[in-house]
Length: 315
Image (tube, rainbow, N blue to C red; front, side, top):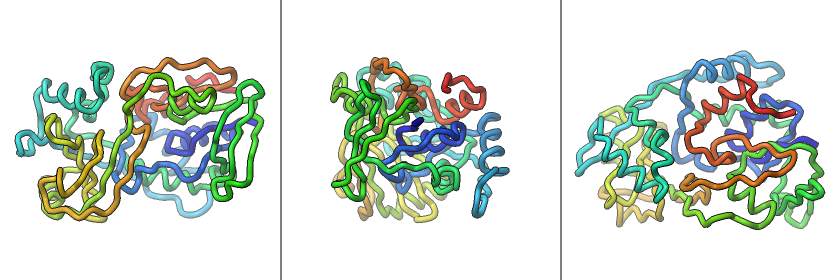
């Protein structure tokens, strides 16, 4: 059996290219989806991917969405003021704040690459369509993975809905899209070096801030100053709410200087890549995507470009 581990956006995109692989998942991915629109940067390779699999699909059922690009805009809060550009030292301050001691490894990828405007597609809309599409629905295997025995090439787990049902899948090829430290844990219970890579997200009703962001036509605000306990705010216009992201737990009534009402909060244990991890070599396993390859400079549009050019050696 050939399998893809993980059903986030990386997993479902990879599954479109590798039609003979089943998708092993504990359930719907993209936990961040209700909290913030993510951007798939527009490139020629991305447009080619969308034309083939979304706009002019083969073997799909249901309504084909009209996924159109748009320009996303960001601002920066410095000293309480929202500005549209910042000096290089403030970008460095943001990377130190969000990436930790090894921040220099992420100079090329932080803060939207330093761009104020980015043309792209709504990644959440794309994910919702692909995950529910016929080619994905028919290849999903629901398994809560507990361990991977590489000696006998077996994925061991339970049914996510009925955990008394134990499952074993014998594989002959694996595409891993799970975060690399978590994959290491599954194969030998070793997380590698300790990582402080969780992110905390809170969605709040915050009329004062979303009115400011709406007036300035901003989708994101970055907060590079060290004494501000959160890193980024995202405006979600369809709900008129704001999502705050941080490397530490956020208490809205204590940390956010606006009148807020908490709607939802979650923690993602592998939400940030904060240090380099040496990849363990495992036969018949290929890591694909930003988190599986532990490469923060690789964005989804880069991965799609590699898939379009057939640069991954996968058979």
